[in-house]
Image (cartoon, rainbow, N blue to C red; front, side, top):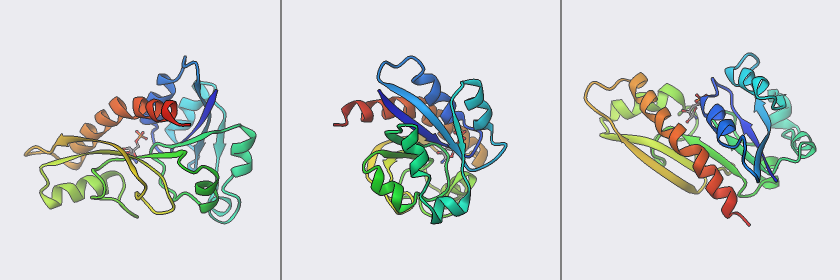
Amino acid sequence: MKQLAIFASGTGSNAARIIHHFRHHPQIRIGLVVCNKPGAGVLDIAEKEEIPVMLIEKERWFRGDGYLSVLRSHDIDWLILAGFLWKMPAVLVKAYPGRIINIHPALLPKYGGKGMYGRFVHEAVLAAGDTETGITIHYVDELYDHGQIIFQAPVEVSAGDTAESLAQKVHRLEHEHFPRIIEKVIEAAP
Ligand code: GRF
């Protein structure tokens, strides 16, 4: 059995899709939901699904052990970042080489890096006048939005699109592809 920890800080709509996707999977299960925001929607989802939750705080995350001991005590094999904004500490990148996957709401390498999240990404796409945007699923290294790209899917930016409408289009793509790409990557891993 491969066990995933889902890292999320927001409403958790991607987390919910991932949890649903793997609910009856014979080899992959969600062992932990990790969150840095008390009260985040993803915590309710985890509770409903009876998945253990770990609330993390900044000091220990960045200057301590990255909670590696807790991840290990839950037998976590893969870290899945679904709307998680804190940078991965080196200790975790080292402990999970090629085993950390993030989703980014744009076509990297465009619109990545520190501060490029949520509506800031969609506003930048609109300001640049791009005719398409999309999603990127990639491995995580120690730099923001930098690791090797696993999968991308585009969507058209139409006249009249707003940051909100782009966010909706991008979310649709994320929900469609993220769970199945995670499954594919894990099944193909040695
Ligand atoms: C997603 O758009 C993801 O790409 C980004 O944060 C958002 C999280 O949305 N990094 P949700 O909490 O899964 O609804």
